[in-house]
Length: 397
Ligand SMILES: *[C@@H]1O[C@H](CO)[C@@H](O)[C@H](O)[C@H]1NC(C)=O
Ligand SMILES: *[C@@H]1O[C@H](CO)[C@@H](O)[C@H](O)[C@H]1NC(C)=O
Ligand SMILES: *[C@@H]1O[C@H](CO)[C@@H](O)[C@H](O)[C@H]1NC(C)=O
Figure 1: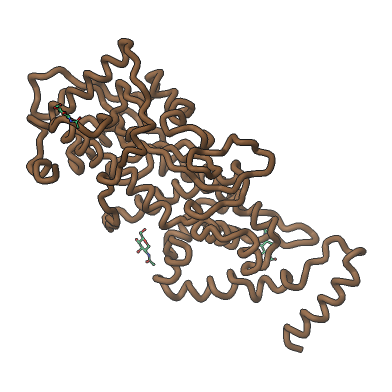
Figure 2 (figure 1 turned 135 degrees about the vertical axis):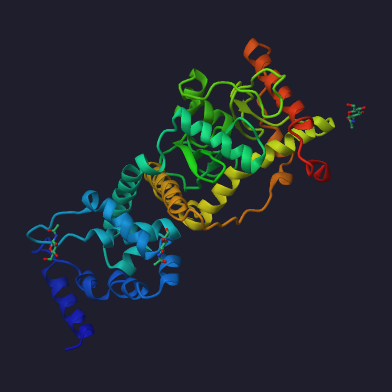
C-alpha cells in the first residue's frame, strides 16, 4: 500500500476516533519523520554546502557547532505517548524562521508539526541561542575591550576615542490585540526598538530591545538600561585621553557616536544640526557619519541575513524581542567564526540624512553638563580640521 492510501485510511480513522483518543496524531504529522522538510530537503542540502548555507545562513560546520552548544538546553524528553522532536530539528525550525520570517503556519506545513509547536520551538530555541552564546559572543565590554574598540575605530574609521556607533532600529510588528498605542511609533507601525552599539568591525557589542516604539531613539536611549548606565557612569569606560597628534591639547573623553535623534552628552556625540554650517562643522559631521556607518551596515547585514527582522512580524512583542536578540547574537557568532573572510556589502548612506531627522533634535539645556558636552564636540570638530584631518575629507565636501 503506498503511503497516500495509508494516509487516506488513517485520516478516516482519525476523524472517527478523534473524540476518544486525545493524543492521536494527525496523519500529516505522523509522516513527519519520513516526509517533512527536515528529513527530506535538509538532509539533501547537507550534500551541497552553498545551498545549505543559503537555507540556514550557517554552513554545516557552524550549524553543528551551534547544535553542540545548544543541545543540552533544547533536548526534550520522550514521553510514553510521544517522541520528542530532536534538537537538530528544533534548531532547524528556529533558524528557518529567523532566516525567512515566514509565518508559523507556513513552517508548520513544511516541517509537519503543529503551529503551536513551531511557536514554542522558535521561542525556546531563540532564548537558548541568546543565553548560551551571550558570554562568548556578546560579553559586557570591560575597560580593556572598550580600549580595543577605540583602537579599531581609529584604525578603520579615523575616529579617535570612539567606543562604538549607536542607533535604534524599529522592528515592525503588527499591533498586538488590546495594546492601545504603546507600540505605535512615529512611522505609523507598531514596533519594539532594537538599540545597538556596534564596533568598528560591525559586531554588536551592546543591544537593548524593547523601549516600545513611540519614543524617538533619544527617548529610547534614556529609557534603556544602557542609557542609564551611560548617564550614571557605570560602563567602566577608559580614562580620558589626548587625541593622537595633539599632545598640546587637553585629554578628551571616550565617546559613542549617534545621529541627530540622540542627545549630546559628555560621552555621546551627535552631528551639528542645521544646514548652513561652517566648513569645520561640515567636516565634523562628515567624519562622524563615517564612523556611524558601522551601525547602519551592521543593521543592513542583520536584516538581509535574518529576514525576520524585515518582515511584518505577527508574533507578540515579547516573542519578537527574543527573536531579535537571537539574530543579533547569531550575527556576532557568524562574523566571529568567519574572521578573515570579509563581506563589506555596505554603501555609504551618510548623504541621505535629510531634514526629517533633524526635527528630532533634542534641545540642549543651558546647564553645566550641556556646556561641557558642547565644548567636547567643538574640540573634536577642531581636531578634524587640524591634526586629525584626512586628505580626502576635502574632496568629499
Ligand atoms: C527519544 O526516542 C528516540 C527514538 O527511540 C531516540 O532516538 C531519542 O534519543 C530519544 N530521546 C531522548 C531525549 O531520550
Ligand atoms: C549662512 O551663514 C552665513 C554666515 O554664517 C550667513 O552669512 C548666511 O546669510 C547664511 N545663509 C543662510 C541661507 O542662512
Ligand atoms: C564553514 O565556515 C567556517 C567558518 O565559520 C569554515 O571554517 C568552514 O570551513 C566552513 N565549512 C564549510 C563546510 O563550508
